[in-house]
Image 1: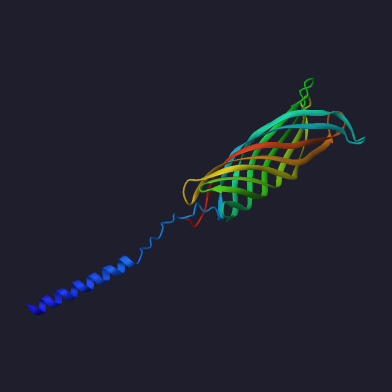
Image 2: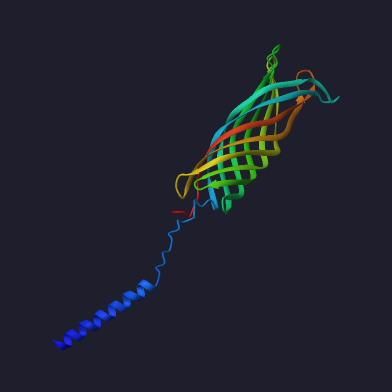
Length: 239
């Protein structure tokens, strides 16, 4: 019994000493810091886009030997479908997102000028488009707003038609120019984003020529248009 009492007193003294040490040391609480990591916009991406384009264009009828304007400006509206695929690469520093993107598209942006007295007409059709552009934007987690601009290329088909004979001359040309605009994207998952984009494109003037309408004429056309596209983009390697 005496040994049990001694052991009890010793244990009681040890617990008391340990409790005293704990009281002398102030507890340290580590704050819980939420993760600062947001949506990751960096890396390779590719996807599809589709939309429509429209523009106010004009043509001229130029007397080829003399180089003088025979008729014009001849204004006409252009509109039609655009759609294709895009691929790009983003880098991200904080909320700033920057990178490069390329796209290739089928296009049906076309317009016609008709001479009211004869029903003879000129037509133009932008049949395909491509661009290589830089992008710079600001990200707020899954929301990205950006500007974009760079080189634009397009394939343009033109025709002049004399109805009464009938007879026509045609030509096609690859035109270079620039495209600028901006858009928004929303990350709907780690791998997929939806977006919308507006761009203004100005391709260089294109022309075709030949003997028609009682003379050898050249017909230059302007190639400016606006376009709005919807986009769906996949980012590989995400979960």
